[in-house]
Every structure is written in structure tokens, then in C-alpha cells.
Figure 1: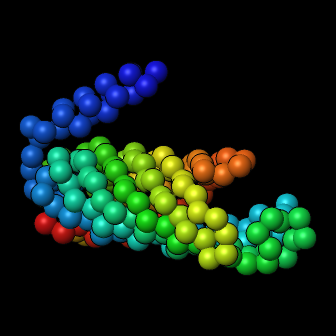
Figure 2: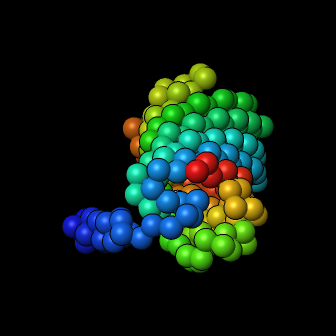
Figure 3: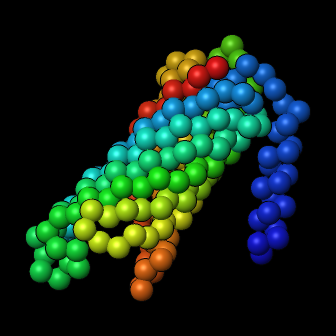
Amino acid sequence: MLKHIFILVFLLIFGSLGYSTDLPTDRGNYMVAGGFAYNHDGRIDKTTFILDPSFSYFIFSGFSIGLDFLFCNESSNSYYYNYGRASKTYGIGPKFRYYWISNPDTEKVKGSVFPYIGATIHYLIYEKYSNKGIITPEVGINTMISNSAAIFVEYDYSFHVSQAKPYTSNALVAGFTYFIK
């Protein structure tokens, strides 16, 4: 299975090398993005607010690598929630994304949609508790509101590792992207 995923990613990345126009996702361009998510879990009376800025560089047309930062604030009024009443988490790690070009016409970038898949690996530092890592595959859509600015919505499914009891979580993230040519 892992071999098939590697081959698919290899073909997607290197299949786009010959494709070059003047799109925001072209090789050599930069991307600055910032997302936010809010979640309230009524089962354990926990509220989470996440701020997620990143900076990336397109090493190939459609494929970017970058650095992602994570700021998370959780609060709970539940006696059963392990972390107590409130905690702050900070994270940093690499981010990888591959964009599909839905409209290769460079004259009509505004209004175009750029769907993507990606992954982020965060090393987390808790304000009060032990450190851990998160591996987050993501799927999203950038909608261009100008030739260099976009709004995005993405779905994240996170694997929380380095814990005695690893667990998963998900989030719907919304934000803004600015492409620098």
C-alpha cells in the first residue's frame, strides 16, 4: 500500500514539472497562509480555538514545502477532561501541499479554484504538559479572489502520536492565502 502511495505522489509531482505558466502555484513562487478553527465538544464541555499560520515555497509547479506554526487554546469546565480547565499549545513543523490546476488559463486566475492535498507534521509544546507530535493529512480548496489572494477551506484529520494513548481528531479550517510571485 505504501509503495502505491509513493508511486502516485511521485507521478503527481514529477508529472507537473513540464507544466509552467504564470499561475500562483508555479515553481519559484511563495505562499503565506493563515487558517483558524473553532470547536466546541459538548460531550466533555471542551472549547478549542486554533490559529495556524504558514509560509511555503513551490519547489515544483503545484508542489510546495514550508513551515507551519500552530497556536491552540483549549478550555474545559469538565471534571473528566484530563487537561483541567485551560491549556495553551504551541507547535512548529514542516508542511507539504500539492495543488491541482483547475484552470490553466493565466488570464482568468481570479475566480479559479485550486483543490489540494497535503500533510503537516507538528512538534507540540504544551504550556503545562508533556510534548507530543501530530501528523495531519489535509484536503482543501483555495478559491482565488484576486490574481494573488485566495480564501480556503480544508478538512484536517490529525493523528496525535507520542502519547501513552494515541488518538485522532478532525477539524474544519478556514483562512486566507496570499501567493507571492
